Image (cartoon, rainbow, N blue to C red; front, side):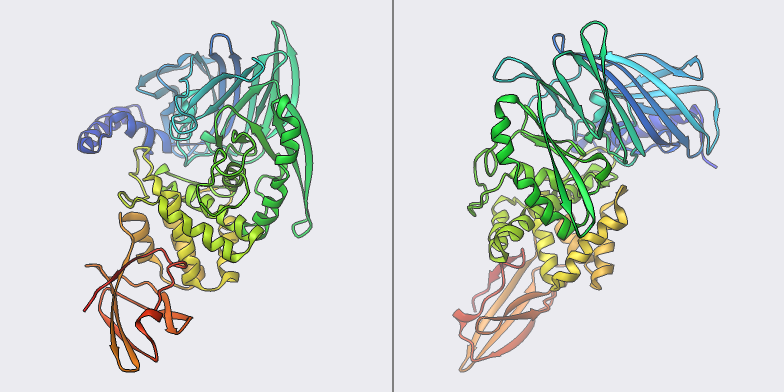
Length: 554
């Protein structure tokens, strides 16, 4: 049996120092290791409930409060790690009426217990803290607190912290692998303002000193970076979405700045169209009990669970720009960030290195929305527009155990991988059953990329492991080389993938004029003869597969 005794801290400290030194060429530090690695001081317990209580002083850009962590011991331990940014001060840690001792290293906090916590024991500790959280530089990418004012001079505050981490503003086990079963969020703000967070509002209380407390309850597991607060003079309006196929009635709540109220009522009508599409292709909305919210924020957007942040200024596309060039009239932020309710929130990766699952699937969901609204040809136009955004300079899976995502290719390249898999599977009914099946199997769970890869391979009946490896773990995409040789009526086509390693992936080509069928290239040369085919009539279905192409001239 593993035991998280105090000496583990010293063993872990030494080991992580060595890790940081060996990773120096990649500019990873001991702080990265402490943040990203599942050490024994983290695996010895599992979080059951967070109860976060925060007071926000807007004038001072300061927060204070507490977080009660209810946990269950996975092993015997007497020391554990939680995380809180080193610029935030811990005032007190309570356990069974005892004040606990702790040590800090960067953003990691190592807490010592006065007795052994036994495997299977449920325990609670309460952490009191305060400080000025990091201000956001370029949210939501460079995250932190956004302390803004609206057009009428009223305070407008939000927080975004996906890669930065929730520990930039509240103490927690800041690792995606451990989600609480439920969460309570209490936010006290100056009276006259509203505080909107995840889940359902359960209570509103006027406090002394000119503050109002808003109590929210999250009924489902939630990843830490999804936990948010939004403070403004919001105006709320509500609607209902009914889906007969699932017998669902989903509450829709919108919190917008008052002067955008009428604009929002019109603009947010596309939410129901989106839900129709996502229900049909990806399954039931995962957080029915908590409802769906769009909340206007001073930054572009974020997928905060059941509380989607919206800052696209009621424009189509991305800040009014159609980056696809495909000319479709929809709001990118609503469609993309809401797709994360399925991909990123219902299903969350254990390590941010596998974030392609969040972003690749959500980007692909945009194309599916286009298909739902505009048809299959429009879908092909939209998904293929993603190719221009791929750099192919780094793998889209990042470095594990150091809180490091892969390249930004995870958005377009991840979506194009899914599009290519759909073409390989060549059975839309099966493909969409797989998408919905992923939700049914892994909803409210954390996963590794390997879990998703294995599931798709098994359910499709196709060994896709080589394909996943190339698209996810290598920089470049497969390059299909081909040679055309004309012999009177026949066209000889020779083909292979340019790879030193074994690689097989089917692709569709014209075996008759304008009629496509599969060929099965490997990294070895193969040839076929096509009757009555001119060189200019031979085509490869590049709109269905994301591959490179080289025509080798004889």
